[in-house]
Every structure is written in C-alpha cells, then in structure tokens.
Image 1: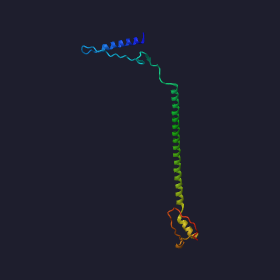
Image 2 (image 1 turned 90 degrees about the horizontal axis):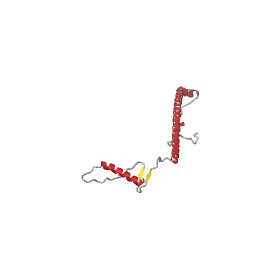
Image 3 (image 1 turned 180 degrees about the horizontal axis):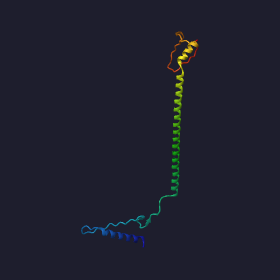
Image 4 (image 1 turned 180 degrees about the vertical axis):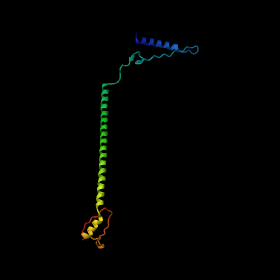
Length: 162
C-alpha cells in the first residue's frame, strides 16, 4: 500500500466520522470540510511524503554539557569566594570589637590614674614651699612683657629679651 492510498483511506474514515456528527440544515446537505488528522510526531507534506520527527531529540549535546559544567564551576567558585569574604569580615568585626573593649578598659584605667595623681598633688603646699624655702616671688609690672598674637595657637621667641 502506498503512502497516497493510506492517506486517502484515512481521509475517508475521518469524513465518515464527521458526517455522522454533522447536522443537515434544511434540504441541502453541505459537503463536509475534511482535514487530515494530525498525529503527534507526524507531519504531512503536500508532496505526499511523510516525514517523521526524530525520536529522543532532547537537544543536549556534549558541548552543552561541557558549558553547564564550566558554569557550575564558575558559580561554585563565586559562592566559595563569597563565603570566604563573609567569614573574613565576621572575623575582623570580632577582632575590632575585642580591641575596642580593650581600649575602653585601658582608657578608664588611665583616667583613674590621672585623677589619683591630680588628687594627690597639693598645690598650696607646693606654693608655700616655693615661696618660703626657695624664695619665689610674684612678678612685678616692669617684668611683664606683652606681645600681640596673630591668632595662632603658640608663640615663638626669636630674640632674647635680656
């Protein structure tokens, strides 16, 4: 049996099915519009040649698998790098927190020592010792030298005033 005969037989069978279900309006029976039924994987070509779709055509080739493997390695590398950087940042933050706590305790200790030293100094006793035992005197008006400042924080003396 040729392809043409098989197609005609299929068309005849389909037209009989459609005729059974067709409804005739009035006294004129219309001719059924017969179209070939398309099956999955079969394509009807006008020349009568039937071309079947290749089976198991998934489109996955060796090049595609290689590309996917390379991309998987690249994404895995980025993930590893990201986790490594995140762990490094976390470690640095812990170190910074530890050093800040150490700095705060040392600063509190230093302030405490400074307050003890300043509290232990008796300025009145030093003044009496300097005036009575060492002969210190307050400056007279002729000993005071006045100068003009040009809005700087310090003064330099370039010549001797004696």
